[in-house]
Length: 218
Length: 265
Picture 1: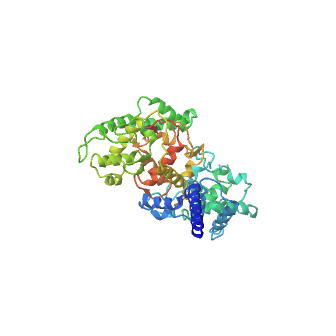
Picture 2 (picture 1 turned 90 degrees about the vertical axis):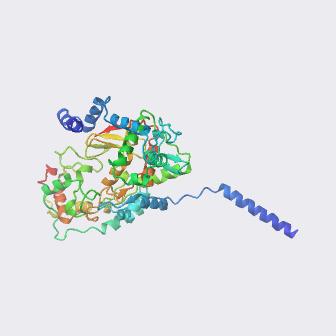
Picture 3 (picture 1 turned 180 degrees about the vertical axis):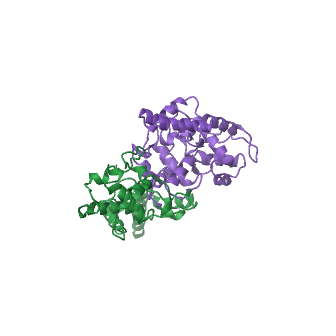
């Protein structure tokens, strides 16, 4: 009797396990681990473009995993705060360089591919026109980013050195230096943070956008 | 011929656009129309058909028994169902990786060596011509990739994640340029590849003859140059990640009419 009861219970338990097995969904594969394996097996070094480029920082990892959707507010804020910490204001406190040099940089889409010889900042362009309308006279511009035509004028910057312009000047520097400081999953490269452009180059782009004499503000 | 084509292309995109206020895209569309009966891709198609039937390689065999997914030798309609799962290799393969398999098993070529050969050289020239002809045999048909096999579904899921994978010095992913509709790089229109972008657009437009350099580019070569501009390291030819991206774009393009081999800037 006793034995029979135990056997019955065991059978019931067995049946439960089988039922649970049928009802439970197939385990979700670890896609991130499988993708990491696939990336490792599929890419190789070529010139300056080495496989260590596939490593992601926390910002890129979170934005990738979102698969095109927005991030939770708290995650976005944390990414922006971490990126803001990387921003270095110009050492000499001067933000505005030569807008003509800035225009050349904005037109230049070169740099950092496996067909480029050097990773030096001097070998890199700003790629700006690839994604933005900038000078009103340039008709060959991309539309991935917002139009920057009359950037300084539209924001009332009559003199970038005037303390009244300080907030927009610093905001613009921050945007160029590390765009993820103000928009966690911005599509824009982090030109200062990633070492793509040096301080002097960034100042020239600042001048292109903010100098009242720049073609952008005519 | 090549120089002439470049001159025509420049005139269409520059002179035409400036003189008549037309966009580059309009100019190219007009140029395509002009060449409708004479797309230079036809030269590659003819070469590809010849290479398919020619006895070649260490075994001196043709590719006529190659199974592109619809049975040995069945070429028509195969392209618009690739990449797909193949039971003999137990892998999801795109057109080019499948051709490598056939060149190795039927003709005795070393697939690994061909995969390592730079584009535009040696047996890569064979592959670009074969891809041109095989895609042309499905011209006008609509993409309908199978997703019945677990590996096909897995490939789609990994392709999707690869599409959104941001990295490198510029933080770029495929999605940086191809995640939204109606965007451009300079004057170049960018198809949104997370959905069906329309007939003969995006996945449904490659392989293509590129007027700017007079070359026939396969989908593998197209992806390779995307990754170059993405500032990524070098993707292996016919590597699993490139195939997974093909599955992702191809499944998304379900119902799109293939115009391959197309004519491009």
